[in-house]
Image (tube, rainbow, N blue to C red; front, side):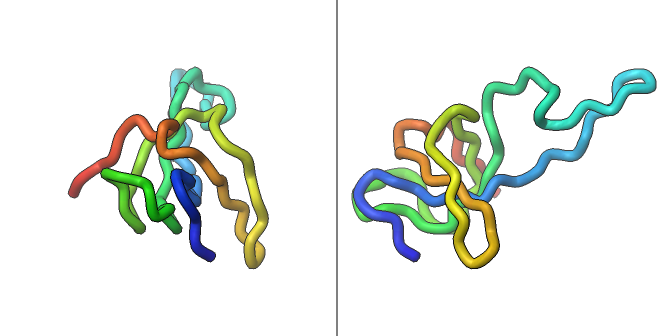
Length: 86
């Protein structure tokens, strides 16, 4: 699979649940505006992001797709807010 133009295919990375007191808060409950993900495919016009980068992107961005049994997300370059460097 190859993304085109300004699109990026992302695999969401599940964050570990956060414990507050006796409660365990998951991604769906916390008020985090951004999701963490790994780029699977980057379009030919995208700048600053490459395959296998870890990124943060707007949680309301893009749409989900199923590919070979995996649930992936397709987002636009403008929805990426942070690229993590290691």
